[in-house]
Every structure is written in structure tokens, then in C-alpha cells.
Image (cartoon, rainbow, N blue to C red; front, side, top):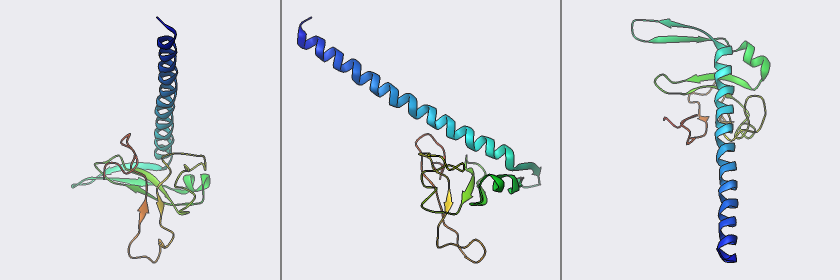
Length: 138
């Protein structure tokens, strides 16, 4: 093996190592975010009540409101993985989780021009993630 081939092989190994690092980091971050929201779902969920037509889930947000007073509600869409808190502070939660830590997933948030008490329509923003989380199933 000549010198050019060794340099090329070393370059390929470095590229593979760097790519592997970012791939593993992305998987770890996705798992961390999934665990954050799974834990929050456990905190707020009171019970599931079965009716004739469907299952109705009851939530108690006071414990989660104590974690972060920007929480204004919860969004859950049956038949999807959408089951998240909703925040109101548009610019802040685009890349922050409920604990105010950096998160590429962010946290769903209500548009600033919406008032939960008076608006006829509420616009909730959230990311479409490639790991099938957040609003990717819409």
C-alpha cells in the first residue's frame, strides 16, 4: 500500500468516525426527548375512561404547571403519537423542552396572537421530526 492509499484510508476512517459520532448523538437525543415526554404523560394522565364510542383520557395539569408556568394546555390526537404539553411563548419553545433545556424537537406552542380564552381558532406550532415524533403523523 503506497502513501496516497494510506492517507485516503485514514481520511475514510476519520469520516466514518465523525459520521458515527453524529449518528449516535442524534439517536441519543431522540431517545432523551421521547423519555421526557413519556415522563410528562405519566405525570399529567389521571385515567382513561371508556365510553361507548371511544376512550376519553383525563389530564391534571397542575403538577406540570408547577414545573413550568408557560404550560397552557395539552394536545392529544387519538390514533397518533401526538400527546404533548402546549406552551405559550413562541420564540422560546421552538428549540427548548418544557424544562427550558435545548431540544431540537422543541415543544408545541400556541401562536402569540392567539388567546386561549377569546380566540375562535388556536394555532399550535410544532416540528415535523423524521423519527416519527412530534407532529410527523399529521
